[in-house]
Image 1 (cartoon, rainbow, N blue to C red):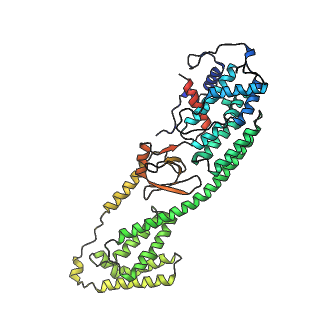
Image 2: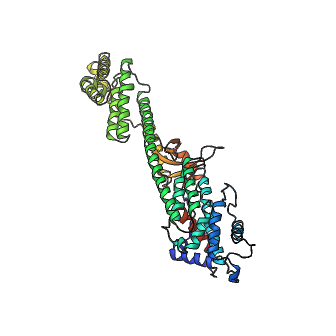
Image 3: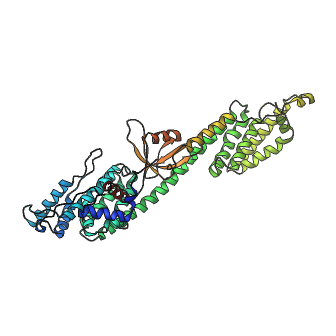
Length: 469
C-alpha cells in the first residue's frame, strides 16, 4: 500500500532538480523539459526586481486566496499576476505599461506550481491548505531573493510550511484553537516580512513551541486514555474468561463471591501488570480451571485424587494468591472456608467403593478447539493488516455511510481482540475498529493512511516530476 505518488528517481537527484528548476525559470530549451523559450524583449518594458518585491510586500497583506475543497482550480496565476501589475502601477502612480520579466514571471509560475501540489496533497487537511495559501506571496519573494531556496532544505520558510502541516495533520476545521494560533503566527509573519528571513525564523520558533506544547498535552491525555482503555479491556477479558470457564458448571452459592468477585479482581490486576501472554496470567487461569473443576461431581480419577490428597494444599495456594491483592483478608478467609466446605461436601457425597474408584477413567486432555480457532483467527486478522498500520500513524477514518471522515491517530492495538483504538489530536479516544473491518476499508480506500511527511519536499518532487519527460 502506497501513501504517496511515485516520483521519478531524477526528481530525487539534487543536481537534476537544480538543473530542471534553472531551465524552467530561465526558459532554456531542453528536450527533456516541458517548456518553451520565451521571446526576448526590451528590458525597458520590465519592472525592476525591487519594484516587484515592494509590490509583493504590499500585496501579501491584502491578497488572501482561500482553499475550497472539491474546487478544481484554487490557484489562478493569471489573476495573481494581474493583481501584481495593478499594485506596481498604483505604487508608481502610473498606468500598467510594463510587465514582469521572464525570470520573475517563471519564478512566480514555479512557486504557484509548488502550492498547487500542496493543494493536491491528500495528506494535508483542508483547513491547513487554506492556511498554507496565505504564504504564497512570501514564498514568491523568497524564491526571487534567494536563488538557492529550492535546493536549501534547511531554509526556515520550508520548516514553517512543514511544521504547519505536521501540527495540523489532525485538525479538521478552522475553529480549532491550535489552528487559530497558527493563523495568528502567519498573520504576524505577513505583517512583518519584507526581505529579511528573520520573520520566518520567528514564525518557525513560535510554531516549534506550539508543537512542543501540543505534543506534551497530547502525550499526557493519551496516557490517561490508554489507562482507561486498558482497564476496560482487562474487564472484558476477565469477564470473557470467567464466562467461558463457568458455563454449564456447578457453582455453589457461597463459593460464587470467591470466583466472581475476589478471583476476578486478582485476574484483573494480573492482566494489567503482565498481559494475557504471560506465565503469571496462565497460572491464574489454570488455578481458576482447577478450582471450578473441583466443584463438579467426581467422574475422573484426577478429581478423586484431588479431593483426597490435594484440596487442602490447593485452597491454601488460592488464599495466598488472594492475599497479594488489597482485598479484605477477613472476606478472603470466609470465602476460603466456603471453598473447603464445598470440596469436603462433594467428597462426602461421593459414595464410591474400591471397585468404583478403580473403574474411573482418567481425564482426557482435550484441545479447546473452538477457543484456539478463535485465537488463531484474531492473530490472523492482525497479521493481515498492512505493515504501515502502526501505533502513532495518522489515518483518515471512515465512520459510516453519510458521515464525514475523521483524521485520527492509531493509539493502541488490542491484540487479544483484534481491535484498533483511534484518538484525536488531543489524545481522546474517538472510536474502535475491528482489524478485519479496518483492513477492508483500507483495501477499498474508504479509510486511508496519512503520510506525515515534509510537504515541501513532496510538493517539490511532484513539480519536478511533472517537468521531466
